[in-house]
Length: 122
Image (cartoon, rainbow, N blue to C red; front, side, top):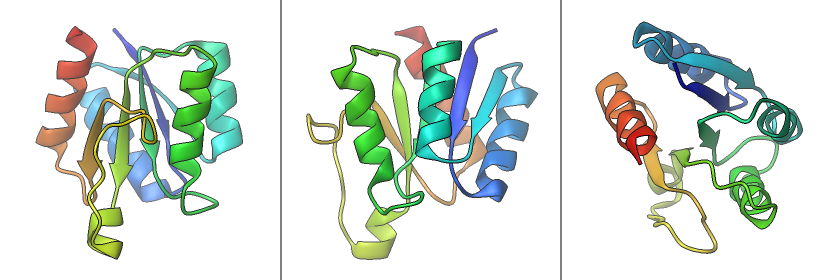
């Protein structure tokens, strides 16, 4: 089964993601901050990255996604975000936000699985 890296500082989100993804047979590795997430991606080469926007800093997820792309890591990235609810802004995929899709928190298990399956088929 594909390996999915979930990088999020919220233990509840990590645990919920782990349960949902494991229930569909995916192997999951968890990171709690940008440094740990970067090391996981470099060492374990996951098939998909799920990345939170806000961790230690409000824009950690953006910077980490940009770093992955600058280093030639083309692994699909889904970004967890609550920014549109927090600040009223919507983000789209762009060079500034080099991710493949977004999932709004709180996360619907069905939506998460649908987006994961779509990106893994690419």
